[in-house]
Length: 361
Ligand code: SF4
Image 1: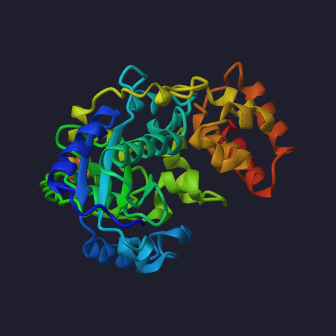
Image 2: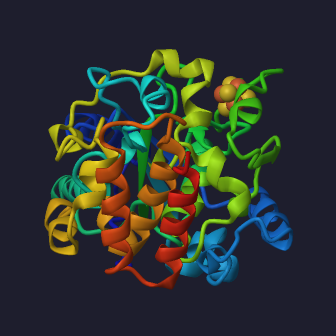
Image 3: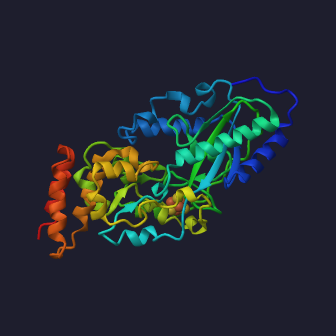
């Protein structure tokens, strides 16, 4: 972090930063102070219950996660920003869940990797601040392991952390990404957002695997987002039926949230779907070779799970897609499952065997 200019009116600068953030396409901008002690206590209790599964990044940074100036010495405030990603013109996610031959991909992952899109915008904002206010120290983040971005956004007034543990906003719902700029500018903090879930429990009731074990307590080991994305091993048998056709992530807790009736269309064309991933045929996706997978997911967040986890997830969905009647294409699907077993490892083969066992009349 660099030394800052002594003559800056930080109240005024804060207003300007919010204006520039909106001009760059963000939907909301707020400022958080550095006191994340409440979020740190919550995190430590959550990890103690093993709810983080094998996501070691949740605790390996220790107190740096909730003490921002320990992670980046000299940090004085954090700029938090929101970027909406939902495209309302697509097949609604809830309709997709009842079309067993289709795959349901979490809506945030349909287009270009949000990390790239948001980091670029955050850097543009930092450069604008530098150009107008002089040199300052900063680091930009989005969905980065050492940063408690939902707690920061809540403190910056962007929304409250709902019972499903996502951030939500009473005018915008929850289909958005967050980004942060850690800065050595002592910007005045905004007011923390207030809580508006009330007595609602829709997300707890709707979770297909009962992963929201209590309000604000998501057991990662049961969560379909974890099982299909972060998890590199087998998907436990007890969750396979409940996965349905969810092949990458799960939006159910957001889908049922009443605040999402206020969702707006994204203004970022990079988030529009690629390769028909908004309503893809399972068989078509499963037929992709590894080369096709790598080429069709280039620049997409899906690429990072790798080809084998991709096959694993789709195999489970194909197991769940069987209607119990002999279909004319059944032989083709079964042959494809058999073919992929030849290019898979033992873990994926076991999922393929499971899928074939589900497709037996
Ligand atoms: S579904 Fe209900 S309880 Fe869950 S986050 Fe939305 S408002 Fe809160």
